Length: 285
Image 1 (cartoon, rainbow, N blue to C red):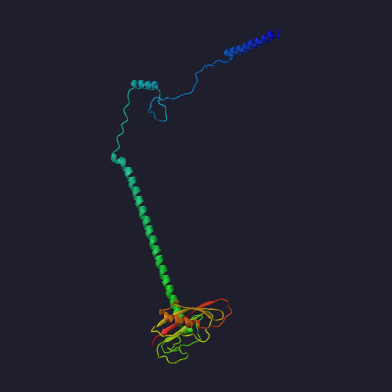
Image 2: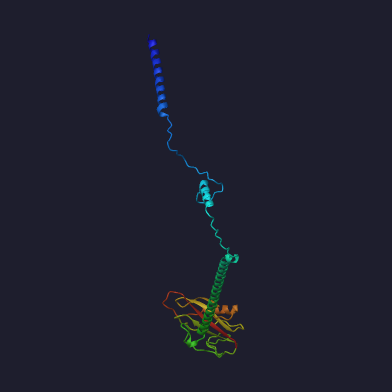
């Protein structure tokens, strides 16, 4: 009995489900799946054109409008054509050719001006270089002249020159003429040449006399020795060949350096090493 009741319930459930789905399907068919057709025609406008070679910013008039215009123009009297006389060919190209010529002339003048300015600049540089070289030569000549003048000026020499000595000798020059033997105080000046000497050391004086180098060469001229002197007055170094030197003999230069190292100057209260010169003038009889 229970078995039949269960089967009846199943059948009723299946029938109810099918009926509900049929009702939903009918409702969709009648109310939910309708196509609404608009009253006015609408859609996306597409322009396929009228000519494959079309060009320009404006749309040409439709063919019907063109035909109407043609019909109207046929009925109206034709107006005389607007005939404009042609421009002569020489007048057409005249302005262009003239402008090209004017431009070329401007470019040519500009190039000439740049070239002229470059030549002026080079000329100025050359003159400035020559002026510098001239001034350098004058300065060197003046320095050499001052060195020689300070070396043999006697009482008129510059600062640091031994102004307390007098000329000694018979050669007719300034300074102290020496003898070949180098004997201090010798009065015989006829046996060979002599050596005149002077020194230049700012604020310092020689102690005794300037040492004389050996003179055993047949050379005449000047040897200027650069010296370095400490505060106690001792000559620390001597190097021959400073500005004003005219003798290139290595032996005489070496002897001049050895003699200059023996010089002694007065002491001072300073602490720095001073640089000065001792000048030897070699005179042949």
